[in-house]
Image 1: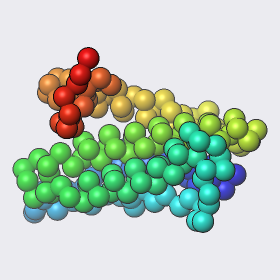
Image 2: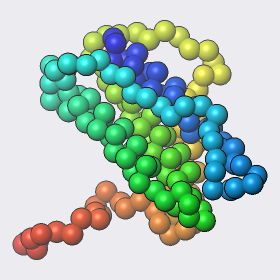
Image 3: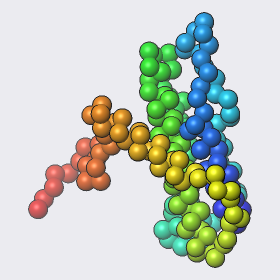
Amino acid sequence: MLSVLALDDYVGSCYAAVHDVPEFNPADQVEFAFHIPEPVLSLPKDVDWQLLGGNLGDEMLWFENRVINLENALDSLDLSKNDHDGFFERRIEGYARLAARAMHLIESLSKQFDLTLPEKPDYYRQAEGLAKVLRNVEAVARRRGTGSPSSDETNVTPLFPKTS
């Protein structure tokens, strides 16, 4: 249950981050600030995720790494570039995808352990809001011609030629 609550808190933080519009310094357009802090994932420590079973255990194990990967990727961008090196778009897409994955994990954990989450108010529609954000991100990527590779494509150069 602690994991579900931590993931739910992270989803809320990601949702807020995705919708947080930065405020720019009028004197220096490179300088900006967000209104809310960056999302922080606080899963319970010293947990053997493999006790959840193969797939779910692996997903939980790797989720924290996915969060760290996004944070590192955002930190590596050159914010002094004209378009901030795509920082804002990547931040929105990254947190929206992490939140969607966390919601999937919450659903899987709830189903496996027969957990019932407290009811949320009707206006609390994170899944719909995040799906809309991701559709917008994908539409912009298609217009730019930089759509995500299909599931059959990869950006990794094969080491060995295919033999069939």
